[in-house]
Length: 139
Image (tube, rainbow, N blue to C red; front, side, top):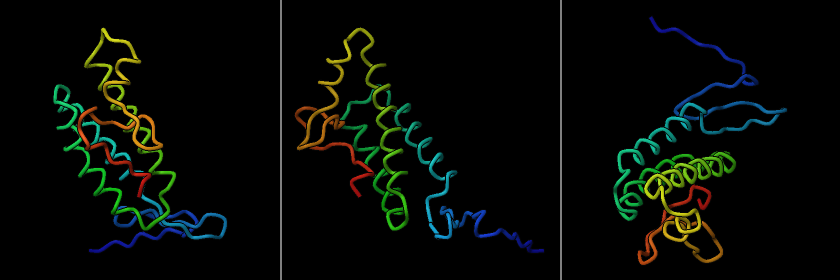
């Protein structure tokens, strides 16, 4: 038998990966917290599975996942969530880079894996490669 779940709009509810809720009289649709954490766990799994892979291969594996997730949630209120996810991904990549070179200094690690691209600093890419990691906040 089908069970109906009732939820007041002020409390919000999750539907198809989105959270629908009224905040101070204004209805906002955001990505669901469960889906955000699942996405970040997926990114973490990809990084850990490729702990010894070259930077270009890691970027090629991460970019489609990040871009797909971002494009799915781009039509809702997600600016802060995209910035949060970008920050968490940066933290994971920084840990990945530090683990690869335990005897090197932080400046050396930054110069090897994080480049300057236009006005952006700390862009994850190889020096000679033209491909860089996709940022959710650029959507």
